[in-house]
Image 1 (spheres, rainbow, N blue to C red):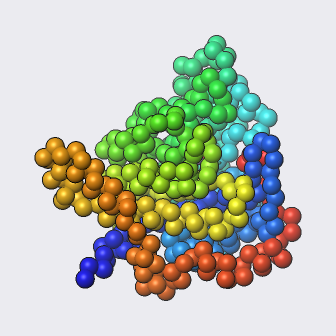
Image 2: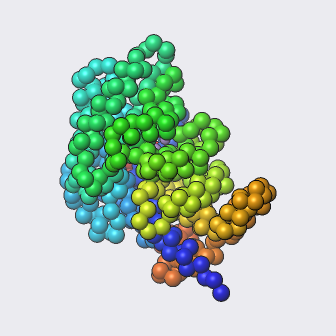
Image 3: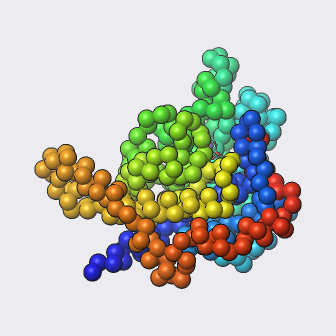
Length: 388
Ligand code: LRH
Ligand code: MN
Ligand code: MN
């Protein structure tokens, strides 16, 4: 009997990074609902991320957001992470929360503000050095609200200049991922609104600059698997910020709103060799859990990514190629929908048992007593820094 050893091996070699900010309190601009037991500092976020990894075996790193996760000694934070079996992943600079950044950061008309933003970006590369991180994830809230507010062209020049300075500072083993977002916080232009603009800047910078696709940052109806495939083709797909959206940048759990879309993205990644050992694509979550408990939501999200990937690995590539060559539209589509309809949960449960994990990580979390312990130990948990 085929026990799908190849599928399980590919999944075991697929790390999914969780974001530190998803463990903290979050909400909308209307209300932040606080939860008992949320982390009070970066060390406690690392502890929660390590718990997610212990139960899933699939989340071996945690992304940091600076200054939300500022600590005195980043080497010590990395050591604490290592002691608990995980690593520090992407470093996310924050050049959007200070009053100085009202008109932008690296694109701001005032050179003093641009300098401040650049200094922070460079400081984040120092933090990469201290923590062993290899990815700098760049997202800029820069943009304008009204036609004529600032020169679109000059802002592009300022952006390019700052990116080049940061790129030059990277070590040979480090790369920068450039994220884009259609709108918000600005509503007329964003300086990096789409994958084409990110791509063009990355090409100009060099091979260690790649595009970061946040699945929540597109216009409704955008075919994300298409752009992912094109970026792969040109070696410019650096990684993902996974989440779900119904309307805008909702940051709901990945795989919740449209699991078929997630499957379609994974299918193109399987086809372009981006799943399994040696993949250079960084799979990161970027979510907020406003209503649901944080740690089990992150566990659920890791499982959702694994389920979509397992289904994509179930696609019968030979049957698909034959149907495509024959121009058999219905048969080709059915190959995909058959794979999507496969219940991969038993296989994933078996995979976990084989590596000594509980087959049901969410149930294992609830049985572990961890939630009760953090609720008792942590009083006065911190805000994610987001949506406050
Ligand atoms: C911006 C974004 C970006 C930030 C994160 C908190 O909307 O996706 O990645 O760093 O949210
Ligand atoms: Mn993001
Ligand atoms: Mn976002």
